[in-house]
Length: 433
Image (cartoon, rainbow, N blue to C red; front, side, top):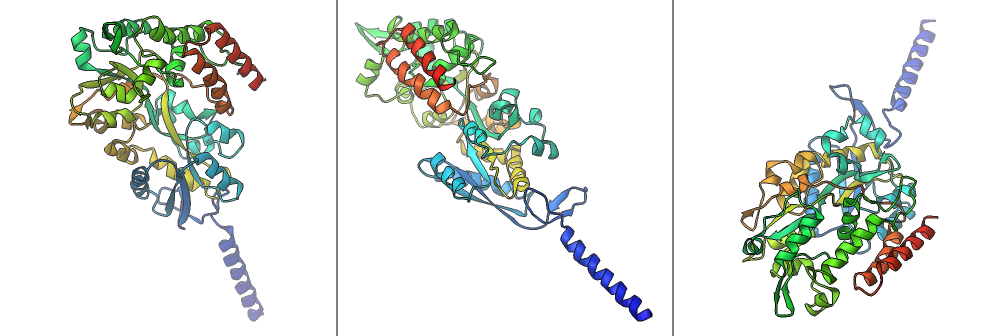
């Protein structure tokens, strides 16, 4: 009897042992083995290997790898392989997804909604909540919502520099014009541009402002006017007074007031673009992104600074997303969460590559008091900027082609405003029917 009882006890112990081994701390997203940490939270005790895709240069990759080393301080079990994608980024990552080898984390920008609409990246709301991430604490409201699609967060913004106004201080001083401020209006811009435009005989040798035909420059005027490209029902609203006034304003600056170079004048200067023309002192103001700071810091003999754009503007951003088919979604979120902390955003600032996305980083002494080319500039211009809700949608690329094709003709003064606006509205109505 004792022998039978002993056998039963041994059997039961074996069953308990097997069940304990199979009961696992496995989660649905990553299948990593887990144990309890001292604070009661689940932590992985097994190494996890992830892949992160990004675009950029080798130096961009090096900055990311430096940031991932910071991430490992709090997530030592997570290893991230950085894949720098050269060429057509979207085509190559789509090939990875279609081939069943998706990355775990993808850097995405304006077209993230294309991936979201195809269910290729996952909404992060549940992970944000379970990891106690306070989006309002980490980001300003406009940046926090920049990767929000159909009411859900699909990415954590990583870099998000607003478009700012670059101005030549010496040219302003010479013309007796007060430096620009965030309190300016479109009228103030025009009046300053008129005073800053210089002619020698019939030839203009210095222009007040370079608007160009790039979408951020005309689109911001639309939203400053109180307009938008879509109504609350997501129907196109291009043929509106707000859009017409914005387009007319830009064209008038070139063809009525002569304060901005025309396409012909730009061609005569070699089509070199706004940034080089500003560096040469041929234009007194331009609106562009953070990248021009690094370029100007290497130019000698130009006294420049930046200011927030008058009224609302847009941000040039990218964010970190998690693929729907990642087998390690929880671990992937720990990575992107860690990368958007202040400490992990510092290498972005230290490298001078871009403006970080988070409130803490944008207001940090390292960012605000950074020097470029041996001089301090108004880096508060980025945090002082107000962003409009960009009309991002899964058909954005097709939308912009319809708009750009027609506006290129209009901004060359070879089409009427009425025809241009009506034709674009018709094209958008067909696209979004």
